[in-house]
Length: 293
Image (cartoon, rainbow, N blue to C red; front, side, top):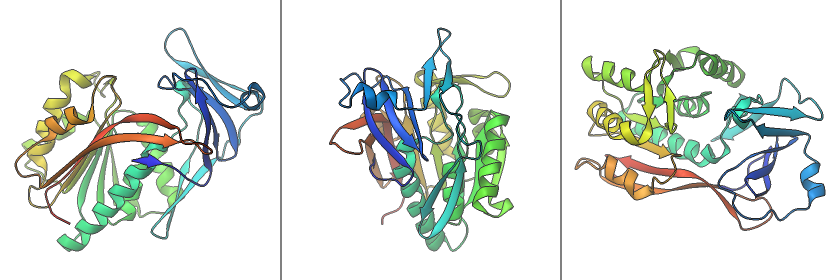
């Protein structure tokens, strides 16, 4: 799944652990550990960036701005004639509220959600775990889903609600849930809730609302067991991704594999450079569907 051409975003160059981008008109440099090759553009091109994210010794990061970016910066995104808007903010760790390698994921989720809505004759009930600022949740809502957006951070939930307002989607189309992802799934299983689709984009490590520890390699198989237990086995989809070093697509496929999945497709996420053939790797994924299309 490749992000190739997107209005208001360009990956200009990468190398030596950094990347050079234009994000809604702002030229930025950010850390990119996967970029172990040499940059192709000149120092002059790199030095033209007005915002630079620098890693700090404690593992965090900070932005240095030669020119303060517009505080009302947004990324417009259109799919199937529906116009959404996502607020951009330059935060520590080099984030801005949107992960651009996720654009093809949004498109896949939109098409599967739209298909299920027509097939089921009702709004599909879907979950976005580790949902961050809600871009994928709003895309699925735009396709007609009833969305449960789950994240342990109140700050990003508020950010997601702001994106919903900017995108002018119905207030009741997304339920914003501050909860640990595994706890939400355990509660769903206990209450015998079922879902028609789940997106899980877990970090390598993290903490839940009550300081629950998340470690991808230790906990992912337990989480997937919970996901499989609450999915509608007749008509449902699952999108699972990983950004954990060493985890390969086939490993995700093996974790997800169940007899009732009709189709499993592992693969890689990446972003194509604007003016050359290089691809910046951005993670692994597996898609699963219990229906044939």
